[in-house]
Image 1 (cartoon, rainbow, N blue to C red):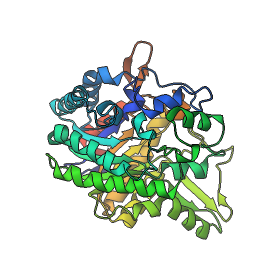
Image 2 (image 1 turned 180 degrees about the vertical axis):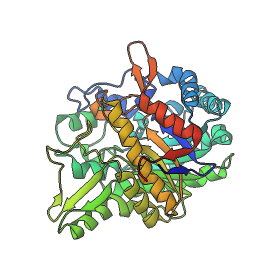
Image 3 (image 1 turned 60 degrees about the vertical axis):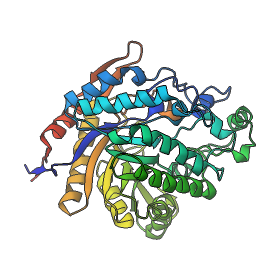
Amino acid sequence: MNKFTFPNDFMWGSATAAHQVEGNNINSESWVLEHLPNTIYAEPSGDACDHYHHYPQDIALLAELGFNAYRFSIEWARIEPEEGEFSYAALEHYRRMLAACHEHNIQPVVTFHHFTSPRWLQRYGGWLDDKTPERFARYCEKTTAHLGDLIAVACTVNEPNISAVLESILPFDLTAGPWWQEASQAFGVAPDQMGLFQFVADRHMWDVIFAAHRRAYEVLHAGPGDFPVGLTLALHDFQAAEGGEEKMAEIRRRLADDFLERLGDDDFVGVQNYARMVIGPEGIVRPGDDVAKNQMGEEIYPPALGGAIRHAAQVSGLPVYVTENGLSTEDDTQRLAYFRGALQSMVDCLKDGVDVRGYLAWSAFDNFEWVSGYGPKFGIIAVDRQTQTRKPKSSGRWLGNIARTNRYQSESA
């Protein structure tokens, strides 16, 4: 067996998003979408994991497992529940969260926007409105002034390419059907003017998002604290089936390269990978019935992480943090095997000189998975949402031990 020791400052942790774990994020546009009469959400988020109140125990548990980093998002809809009205209480809540991380020697990796926005932003058209970058920069500036001295790493926005990815892989149009009309009425805008971050695949919206990212990058670096700033992308490992090289390059450009090339002088890129995408001459090749799949219907293929890391580093020219990687399954032995394969592919990248600086598994907890509700189980910690009790899984203890020792032992020579 081969042993690999990671760099001394390597980050090990897990990740969450505020709306998926905090609960009762009622000023968010997602809360509105979940409660539409014809919503496409399987169920509402409700109390979620009540992480908003349980964060002291949750952070202590992550430290106990052996992790030295925790990626979480702060919620714009809590900090600025109405335009121009900033909540000191919400800012203090997140400051206490950051302080709890430091108390347990955990480095906080803070995401400023993880899919959800204040519902008031949608009255202007959300991420289709040209004034959104300045609104987002104002929120980031106010927040950084209050929290910046405690932040270790900052992600401005999470997966700006997610709508392009979903448009390519889903068999239906997310913006069609009665729910979209109901949403437009709820927000008081025309259906074609709803700039919902996760759902609208529109080049203008991506221009707005990247303008917001650039402005946020500036204000985060200008505020208190000294930390790297970047964003995260949803990245498959793109592979060509026989005769599919040209089509693969075309799809990879649309879903990945067009976004990677816009990162410029960012301090890093966050790689978020769960699967590979096989592409033939006619387009995406769906995994067959004989292929093991996760709960999202994707092929279970752990080495995809290494392919995504290599491509992101090559195209962007930036250091990499793996900000999400994991498996949705009820079978935790399957998850542990997935982690083994994924980490081996990351080790191979490091051995080849790729600048990988951390690994943050998705997710810390079994949480609210957006339109899929609470069905998919990504967590390395199980949550009984009736009692809000936590129970670490074997995969979480295994990964925590890797983090504690900072070494990975491969099973092959």
